[in-house]
Image 1 (cartoon, rainbow, N blue to C red):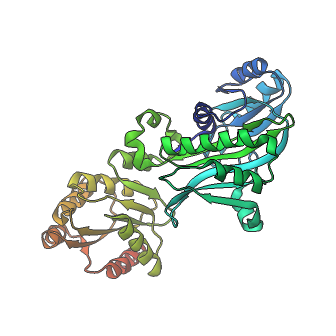
Image 2 (cartoon, rainbow, N blue to C red; image 1 turned 30 degrees about the vertical axis):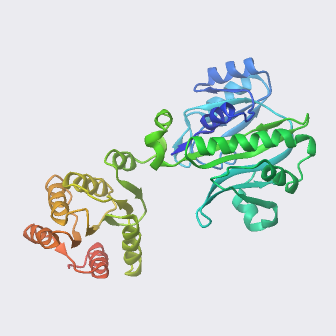
Image 3 (tube, helix red, strand yellow; image 1 turned 180 degrees about the vertical axis):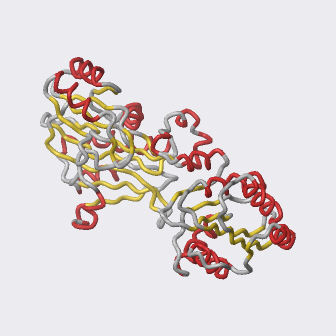
Length: 380
């Protein structure tokens, strides 16, 4: 779950991270009023959950209230990378002396959180990592000990931050770590953290991503989710506790288990096909859940065939078969299915499917081959 910049900054501010004065505006008139209240110049910043806002015309520096209203009318209602701009963050403009990248994420290889910083902030950190890796400072954080003061001071030294700013930088670093821990973030990022001409530090931009698996204990943050940035299929999938990601291929995938789902997609690619989605129904899926998953897959107009690959451990294969037949009975699209069932009650499930004139396979590779063939119009 991604948060907008203004939402991230609200959380930053509550944890001692200084942010510029600013307010949200949803109309050009509101933008003008906020600009007058804050004092000019101000920056108008489109609130969309994608990067590259500046290059796309979503950020504008204005010097008069009328200019704020005019620019806001140009930005609001437009789209950046397909996402509509419904709100602007109007912020007091700041004189910048130095820009710093400062963030925390998870290093899955090391099994620890990692704090990343660079004196070359304000641009994509990925580009700096590729072109100037020596400018990226990385420090692992022991989750049992937490972030230590000496680690933040070490980073300040490495990025050549003036010593007079160390105390504030330490406060920001510890605040960022507190945010990362308290809301189960997978990313807490400030880019850029700026040093002003007066020697003050401010988080000019903020980005937070929260682990969806932890939302059950972050109830107060769930309402902050922006559903306009997500596909209708993903929203429906979440209601049924399904993991769904839409892709650009034409072979739908319905699998139980993330690893098996990835292996299924790999086999489709090996056989010359293109998966249309990642969909993991999880363990213990009922026939109702399988039916819902299949309906979500079939809502994609690009689908030419569906490969269903189920390993029946907790999940019963006959339950899956009933869900498939239920979904097909309620759907007008005549999309061929290739189904592989292995495990608990597999034979019972196969019998149900054969009685329903469905295509079955014994191995994953055989299923992938059949799916690619049917997607190309070759009869199985």
